[in-house]
Amino acid sequence: MSSKTILITGGAGFIGSHLADTLISEGARVIVVDNLVTGSMKNIEHLLDNPNFKFIEHNISEKLHIEEDLDWVMHFASPASPIDFQKLAIPILKVGSLGTHNALGIAKEKKASFFLASTSEVYGDPLVHPQPETYWGNVNPIGPRGVYDESKRFAESITMAYHREHDIDVRIIRIFNTYGPRMRADDGRVVCNFINQALKGQDLTVYGEGKQSRSFQYVTDLVDGIVKLMDVKYHLPVNLGNPYEFTVYELAEKVLAMTKSKSNIAYEPLPEDDPKRRRPDITRAVELLNWEPKIAVEEGLEKTVKYFAEKLELEVV
Ligand code: UDP
Image 1 (cartoon, rainbow, N blue to C red):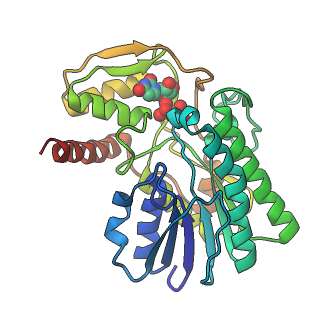
Image 2 (cartoon, rainbow, N blue to C red):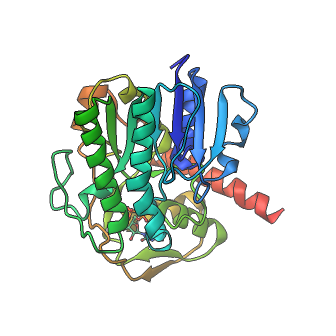
C-alpha cells in the first residue's frame, strides 16, 4: 500500500474510518471526504496530525475536484442504518446515484482504480439462502428500505458500466451485517441497540418475535477482506460477511449474558420488508482472496461492549 494515495468517501464513518486506519498503517496516504451526516470527526481525530492524512468536509453527491494524483477512489459514503432509510431517504438515494457517479468521475479523471462498498441489501428479502453473488435479489423498490437497496443496486450498475465503457479497474463488495467500535450508539441497528440497552438496564427491543436471522461480521474481518481484494483484479461483486447465522432473539440472549444485564426483552412490531433470513455464501471470497472471518461473535461482541461501556462512562462523568 506504501506510496499509494487513496481517497475514501465516507471515511469518517464506522467502516470508512477503520479502513483509513488500516491503509495508513500500511503506508498509504489517505484523503477522507465526508459530510459528517452520519460520520463523526471523533472517528478520525487521531489521524488529523498525521502527514499522510487529509480530511475534506464535502458531500460527494455534489461535484468535487481533487488536486492530487490518486491511485484509488473508495466509495464508502452512505447512511446505512434502517432508521436512516426514513430520515435520510433522499440523501441516501443521492449518494448512491449522484455520489457514485461523482466518485467514478474522479477515478476516471485520475486513472485510479475504483472500489464500491455495496451491500447485502441488494438481495432484499432473499428467496435464495444463503445468498451467492449470482442471486439477483428480491427487493421492493417502493418500500421503506428501497431507497438504500435501489441506490446500491444503481451504484453497482453504474460501476460496471464505467468498467465496461471506460475500462476502469473496479471492485465491488457486498457487505453483510457488520458491527464493532465506532458504530453510533443511536444508530438503531440491532447490535448497538441491544448493547446500549443492556448496559443502561433498559429493555432490549426485539422486533417481531425475534425469529428473523442475521450473520454478523466484526469490522476488522471486513477490512481485512477489503484490503485483500484491492490486490486482486476481479471486477464482479464479492460478498464479505460472516456465515455464522443466528436469530435476533439469540443475539439478545448473547448480549444479556455477556453484559450480565438484568434487562428484560420487550417485543416491538417487525418493520416493513424486514428480511427474514440473511447469510452470505462466501465461497467466492474464500477462493479468490484466501479470506474468511476470524473473529468469533463472542470476541467481537466483547470488544464492542467494552467500546460502548467506555463511551457511556464518559457521558456520565
Ligand atoms: N432489530 C431488532 N431490534 C432492534 C433493532 C433491530 O429486533 O432494536 C432487528 C431487525 O428487525 C432486523 C435485525 O434486528 O431483523 C437486524 O436489524 P439491523 O437494523 O441491525 O440491520 P438489517 O439487517 O435489518 O439491515
